[in-house]
Length: 404
Image 1 (cartoon, rainbow, N blue to C red):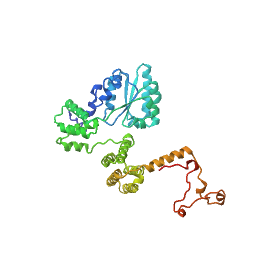
Image 2 (image 1 turned 60 degrees about the vertical axis):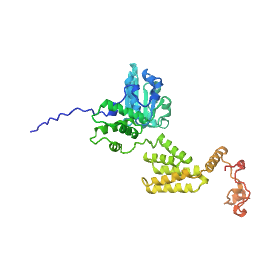
Image 3 (image 1 turned 180 degrees about the horizontal axis):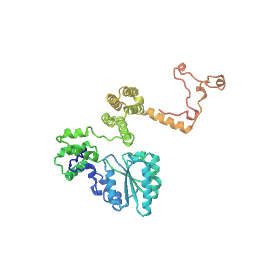
Image 4 (image 1 turned 45 degrees about the vertical axis):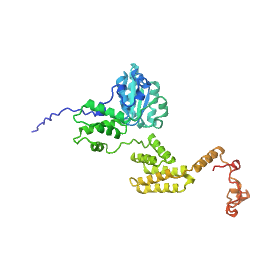
């Protein structure tokens, strides 16, 4: 005989995270992007008039791209389709476009929001081109990556790019205060702790709200230790294959070039904390040793190569000190770009003049035919002249050229 067990009655709970529940309903509710969304700016007016152009929203994580799309969804009278390139494929896009074509016959327009549009490769993005151009769909793409690198140039030319800035700690703090007011948690959290969350969230509102929610729902005392435990480590934004990767390696290079060892170590630390391959950094240091130091200090190149080998042997975390040693040394070293500039000029001449013939007197003559053709004839062996011989080594067209 079987018995059915009646499940216990449970208090109904809201499963939606606070970050989702706090999504703004109007443009004025968006905090931290006032420069872009002031009522006199183009984008705010376009939302108000329900006249949205195809666009790319570019900004770091948690800066408000999806929230802005949510505001547009609430404001528009068009069909609004929310789509993630991270979880769905081109087949789903084709279905959406097919439906949009049918709706257009009934004078109903469609807005297609594609979150993480950079997850689509250039070929996949090509599918959108004719439908964006014809107006079958109005595209809103959101990305954390530089659209110049990650969005098809043809698609980019048919959209407007709006840049959302990283949220300042003051904006994050205001968002957290709004969350406390809205949810009225039974536990109190002090202003200094809200400031700590705002600081550690590194401009990411979603991370900040999630941290606040976890802290308040935790059974532990709400203090600095709990906040740091939830974060585990500072959330440093560093896209190893995108623009921030190039921004930070540029900052490291220019700090060393300017002789600022302290700034160089900071940017080095940012790359390491962001998960950069130490061998990539070491290769850049090898390049710097010749490009910016060169003949002023030949030991710099030897140290840089030794640093690369040390990183190869040890790996992280041990090799961080070798990178720091090398970066500080390169920053403090005397600098010379004479070799770098000379090579640049020589390459320009190589391109400009093409395949100029090697002067006969400095050619080798390993065969009788070459000797008969006067290869090597008249060459002055430098040691015989105590390296003071007068002899032309350039092609005739460049005989008076000086690179150094």
